[in-house]
Image 1 (cartoon, rainbow, N blue to C red):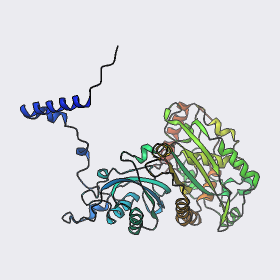
Image 2: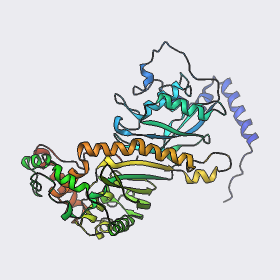
Image 3: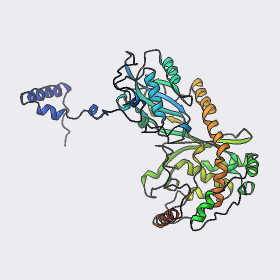
Image 4: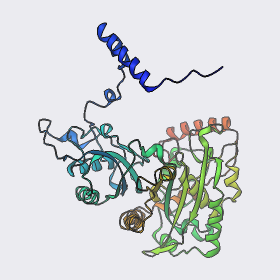
Length: 460
């Protein structure tokens, strides 16, 4: 059957004019039906309670925005998440978006009538980060009023209104339909950790007072108390800091991380998803380890994973399992075994070392390379700003928290107190055991960090 001939635009225009004239003659009912959907009608009519705009005097209509035409820009954002309850604007808590919106308003980039209603300026972000999570390559997109030729001046002005732990590193013009989340085709996360987490068990054993008291078995109130009372022995911790990762161990680490590369079923590396869920299929482009470096007497290493997208706890479970492989608790074959349909419990590394390093827009850059600036941000001065922020804010925050709370030594103690067996079982049987275990732990008066209770997300 032949396809119907497409109407010329002039015919469509004439038909629309005829419908409008007919609607006017009939009292406007047809026109109302045709135009009843208007996306602007769905914009919020009230200021978001989480915005600083809610604290302004409603009678004050003073506008700091100039006469520049509103255009869509991409803002490369870096921040330390320690002081904030996540990226996304929320009620009653301090967020990165609220701080950025206020700075843009004070700098004259947002009109008074749009302040507090970010949907009106097409606001979107490449990825969400949760409470305490850092970012060095977040991209936020919004329609802003910036005078031509004064983008860099505007960026510096915005930074003057931001806290020191939030910085706009670059501002570039993007296409009018650009969406940071939808156009982001891959993301890079980095994880900073002391190298002693990869030390063989014999070299890192007995760093607790009464370690191993909370042995594996039925979870009771006594077991919970013993688990929660685990403490890091300062002398043993000092000895851990002396550990250095040798060349053979570094090579083994890199070989182990490479196992995750490719498309796999990562159902065991997340929570609440069954093995047959299509959401569990994820593609990891690369997983690498940098050369270790020594800072304040402790050797640190930066792990870098690039993927199209990530699941809840995905990155932390991959790293936690890798740590246990290097420690000798389980063979490297456990990683591939966890890709199978059977269920397996896996360790989850601490969230303290995780941060969003970069959002990638390869397809967008290829499509618009001739008429829009690149979003690769790989120019020498741009890279210097990104790395400079990491070294000035993100790395010190991670290392300071480690010195104060002994995050990684305590995690190793907990891992040794209740070791993972890495045994497999059918999903239905595993789910029933988990439900029973949750009830038992709740009746016992507490529970250590678990997948079902964690609300944080490695990605969106």
